[in-house]
Length: 183
Image (tube, rainbow, N blue to C red; front, side, top):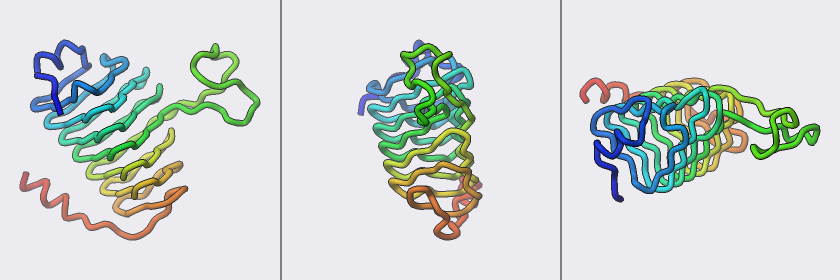
């Protein structure tokens, strides 16, 4: 994987950029002036990060794996030590699928009914491969979402969730918080 140099990253025009940030040259950024990336974070190949007016805040030690996408007008926050696995999609905007309105961004807004809501992935949480996170969701601190899950409502801290829609499976260990102190 070929990463941008620090100077190349600075030229992209991110809102803020930490130290030791690794970003693939094959990742795509839309509205980088609304994207913050914290220290020691990494964005892999073929990711699409499209920050709307709410912005995208990526904390420290965050990994966004291959083919992940983060899209929408609402604010998206990935707190420290979070992981977005391959082919995950996080949306902070959503079309109205009822048929009462038209859909897609090529249609003028007066004919659509798009909703926007913030998404927050709290510290020490991870989202498994192929999962989808919808607008208005908060994934509680230390939670894990199993692969191929649909997260359509907020999740309580400290549990493992799986399925479509995601359901609580069991309590998750919290040793990672102790390890953070050692780091």
